[in-house]
Image (tube, rainbow, N blue to C red; front, side, top):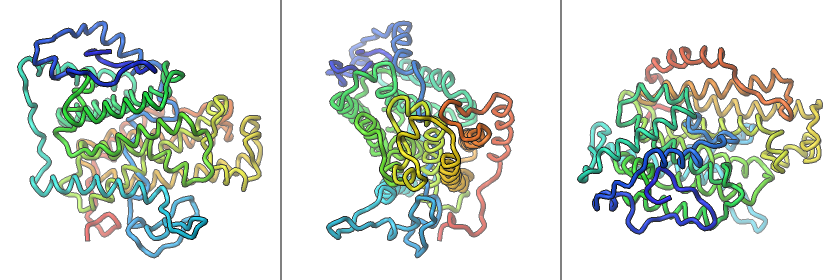
Length: 438
């Protein structure tokens, strides 16, 4: 949609602009009809919702936030996760050793953590670079960030409230990341999803590359481009989120938890990796950078698993089953049972095990939240506490996630905010733990 707030993807839309946002600014092109832009923007960003929970407010996470992922000789936990790098190697039918999804994801974690550590070595504290001001561009950049904040405030109210405690620079950066994630999710879950093709996602990824090269296409791209120029944010998690959108175009079954884990990382865990460089790690933290990123990834996985369990009935009506097929079979269940939507003892037992696994990921995430910068903890704690309560509501509904949607009511949400705030005041622990640097 040219230099407007948002570009609506269709099979005929183009993703890049020959001039780009900054070039238009240099040429004095102020053709930004804000009323039209906001109206068009709402069509893509604001219509629909984040189905299966890819909303930013819940994504600061990853499942291996402790020493389990540092090649220690530990046995399998039995909850679907392998507990060491060595144990994440599996043999192929040909006898070759291949990596599980968790190890593939962990490699991304290491890369992002190394990027942050390189920047920290060059500066005692993570200093935010000043805006690169081009003639006539600063007001438009501020407008872009303001619009990102409006979208966050409208569609992630609790999280938005928490971001107001952050420094202005970090707050705006988180808004920009949130909006990009929401726009990306809308490609396959929004009003134009029926027209989405792999080629269109390829164009969206090419546009992402332009953002990281400093060639944004529209105002909201400009906010993200400015953000990634100031913080040590790696492009790989953004690419991986797009890969999750590709997966949704062709895949509707997951044969085991290893496959499901990778999907959860793509569509949710990635946001934690995008966001930790902006939120920052507390200066007094003794935790390893990798462990904090692992905890961030754990929250994303936990939130995504929670949304999958909440939306079983809704997804089934769309012909999708986001549950491990092998575990369904072990429980004596099949796709037909999901489509029938009957709550039986077999289903209750199956759901209890799935909920236990999700809670373990939340436990992993909790270990790392206190290591974040003090001004960043509140929104993360709020997200964690509220999403974890959805699992409680599924139990309250007697595991009927076919026809009843589990949700946290307003009084419980209000109660969670001061609890989250109190938890955010707890400083990083200096006691011996898997998080503490050796």
